[in-house]
Length: 202
Image (cartoon, rainbow, N blue to C red):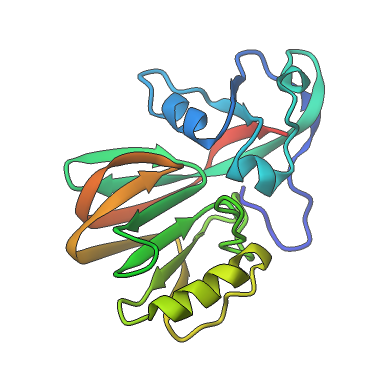
């Protein structure tokens, strides 16, 4: 069951046997898109780790150790010529400084940016922020300076939505990154939340 306002997320327990430990978001992306993806994961660094305040010590996730065990949502992504799953975010852009930029976030952070201050990786929704094509370079730089503190919103040129599923079509192909891994270019994109798809150890 996804998290509800006022409820604790997860509960203490022993690290389950077979838990896959990833170094960062990109490593987790590779694991989740392998032929035999794990059902229980842990991550030591990156945007998901920062969002859930995970331990940076891989030994913390050794079998038999006590951790917090919690459910985790996945993002199911379809794009031109492919499909994959990811946990933290979907980014489609040609440049941060011009043109369309789309960030679909399940994690709160994207690098040093607090890109989705209200996001939680088990609330059953994603937070999508789309930069209007008309947003000037100057305004983008101002927004970028505010991103580390999450104070970039609201802004008339930043279109935001919270949803369980959505589709986008771009006028020109954009480069697509899933959890920091470049997967190709696409003109069409569909993202859907799969609630409680994984178990994460923290």
